[in-house]
Amino acid sequence: MSQRFRTSRRALAAAAATAALTLALAACGSDSDSGMSGMDHSATPSASASASAPGDDMASMPGMEPVSAGNGLAAAKDGYKMASSAATVPAGKATAYRFAITGPDGKPVTGFALDQTKRMHFYAVRSDLTGFQHLHPTMAQDGTWTVPLAALQPGTWRLYASFTPDSGAGKGKGFVLSRTVKVSGMAMAAPLPKASGTATVDGYTVSVKGDPMAGMAHQLTATVTKDGKPVTDLQPYLDTYAHLTAFHQGDLAFAHLHPETEVDGDHGGPTLGFHAEFAQSGNWRVFLQFQTGGKLHTASLTLHVG
Image (tube, rainbow, N blue to C red; front, side, top):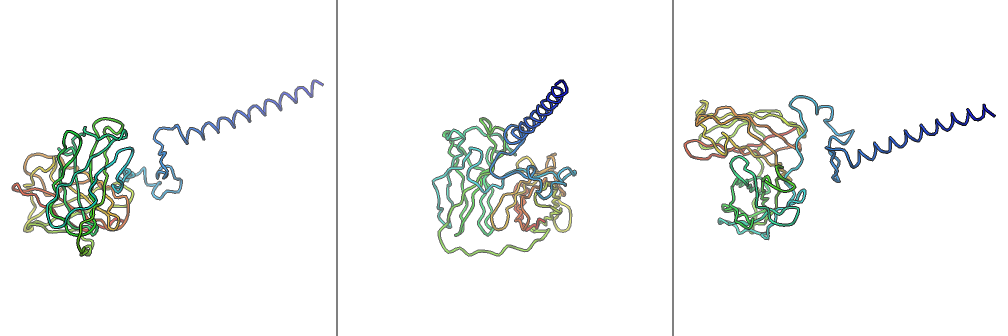
């Protein structure tokens, strides 16, 4: 009898241990789905959450950090929306385009943080990656932004708003939202120039070097020369010596490119560094803007990302 009692006690203890382990594992599984900080709970799994995501083994390498989320192709993200009633824009003449950024509460956002001296950066580019414009709209008290678009050629254009809320749920987070507009008339698409590391504009030669890889953060180096000589009189523009923007061929995804060269008087150049993040491989149209003698120059080239 005593032997059977001891055997029963051992069986009950083993069963209890197994049940405790099962509950612990279930709790861990529950935490990984809903409670762990830093987890992406969107419908699309993040790269870090996928065991087979390409490049995971490279994420810990210096200079190979995963890129930030977002490609600028959505009109709404995390409760913020780029709202506008304008679906068409007239061709061949300057136009005042109006829009608003609404927050998670549906009301227009009026508080924005400064980013490179501006509270809003606005970009326009046609579907064939021509006609690039980088503008800085003005905001009315009711949160309506007005941007003076230069004359647009017929075709489909994508308009981007880049901003950082200064309050609310998205405070301190950078957003790039966009909408498309149609410009009436017969669109004459221009072929994308072949990939090249150099471009010329207004007598200046711009060279961009680097080996960017999709899905990773890399450094790009831009060098400005004139008549074969280094340019060292670049003037500050938006609190930097050059501004770099890029769009992906085909879908017009927006790339996040940030200057790394600090401003130190009116003698920037010839070499400037940029932190570059390209979400996709393929060809990207790159626009580099710099200022000399009070004049803004915009150089464009095609960069291939592996």
